[in-house]
Image (cartoon, rainbow, N blue to C red; front, side, top):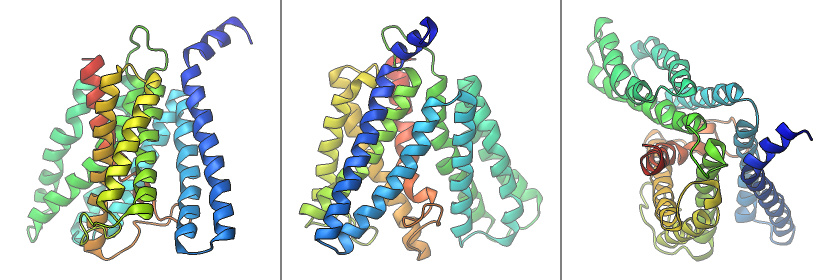
Amino acid sequence: MNILDQIGFEQHKEVYSIIGVIIGILILATVIFYILGRLYPGEQTTELKRRTRSWWIMATIFITATVVHPIISFIAFGLLSFVALRELASISTNMRNEDRGVIIWCYLAIPVQYYLAYIGWFNLFIIFIPVLMFIWIPFILVVRGYTTRISSSMSILPTQLMFTVFSISHLAYLLSLPEIPNFNAGGRGLLLYVVFLTEMNDVFQFIWGKLFGRHKIIEKVSPNKTWEGFIGGLVSTIFMAYFLRFLTPFTAMESWFVGAIVGFAGFIGDIIVSAVKRDIGIKDTGSAIPGHGGILDRVDSLAITAPVFFYLVYNLHYA
């Protein structure tokens, strides 16, 4: 290893450490759930094994995004948004046939949004979709001349764009944040931090809910969500945020606060997509991940935690 490689390793050793932890946890979970499945076969252990397989897939995607060349990372996140948007559009039964031609503008917004994230043009990044596309899409709908149920389309298309592209693109922008003194992990560390916290929050809520869940939170929307699972997951995520703060510039107090916000935001993202699926009458948004639905099923929480976390860290340490 030459001196430049040594410097690079020292700068990102925190990132490599957490990647090792993530892989170790997944290996341990795979072994434990396999043994449990052999000893206590049933629906719960089968579900745990399915989730573990999906966690492997998602972990591979995000770990790869942190270690490869930045351009590849941004392309990967753009494709993630593309698949999520396509899944959401394909299950939206309220869309008119006339809207299928307009949604191309939503797809065209993806490379623009991620290019803005790549070059770090923050002022345009934060207004391109919420302001410019919010105006442009209704305008295109109007000039096409189909006014029946147009107000519904004006709501559906921008919302889909916000949830699957604008929100998720904040994960990519973390990689474009400037370096700050005494913080070696950088944007890669922040990316792993928020993704790992979000995914583990889902895991903690699922496990605590299965072990101790008795009292439903929103039974008509997500019957499996319980107060015990939510609180157990939230507390676990707060502790995880504290112990992994070496990946961030956060103080101890800030890490407690961010952990609580990420845990709560993840819960919000999960139940939003659950409500959409219940309205449509489907279990999964797609079949991209064998045995555990589509991409949107796995990034529903990230769609909320990503922008929330981004603006927390940005305003605390970069503004």
